[in-house]
Image 1 (cartoon, helix red, strand yellow):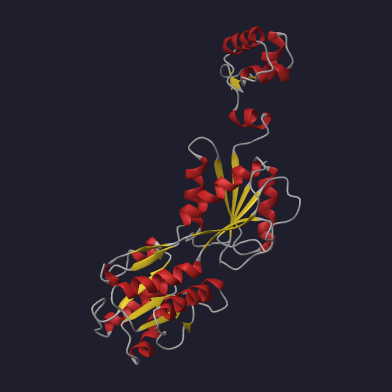
Image 2 (image 1 turned 90 degrees about the horizontal axis):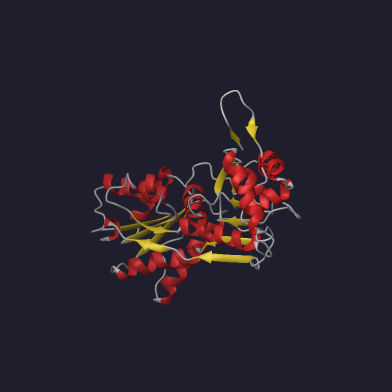
Length: 336
């Protein structure tokens, strides 16, 4: 819809149709290049549209085609550590000008999530991407939703739903394999909340890699909180044992470990190597020395979620859980 001049009403598709002597549906098809309209009718409609300075509203055009060009992204990740790179990956897949992503933060509240869901559906989004706050499976948004849904970071508890998640077992495995490749053999592990699947999955992968090389972890996995404070407080117990490397369950924990090692005069990586997880830039930026970290490839997760959303819209996605392989980003804390 357009406005011809100040004070005058907007020109509508109905105005174009009436002056061209066709129905509104035919005018819409002509303007949108549909094959069902004859060349003569299309030319007549386009001539009238030009004469009236009519420019179709992008949203109205999309809705006539059954799409609004918008996608909802529901997140429980308050800090944006997972949701923002996932959002960037999704936008890359959608492409500039093709779709807009509406971001809603439910703050871990199921009632707020349902409110956002109703709002997004009311805006007639073409699909939904749901980002969890942890990797444990979560209940589906609901059955019989009018649009496709893809769950990412945290899978749906329904195995038939489309989910894209990180491979935390492999993440733990490659963390240890990297340390072994640098000559480390006495490796300890400090992680976050034991009730989080990410913590136990990473530990399982790390232990498996050690076992494959005939080695054992130094001491138990020290579970605590996902914080710098926990990383700092864990160092005293670590140094009571003969360790030459520490796997830290997150970059926050690793930063705390680095600080405490520095305070005690322990050289990193000469005496002890340190590796973290997530490659979270705000945390990595403050680490001295620069922290080697496992990048979980959140942007790839977002891209795959968007691609599967497109496939679901066309009935081509079979559902099920897809895992994204992480990678090691080598920096100074392991001798990189």
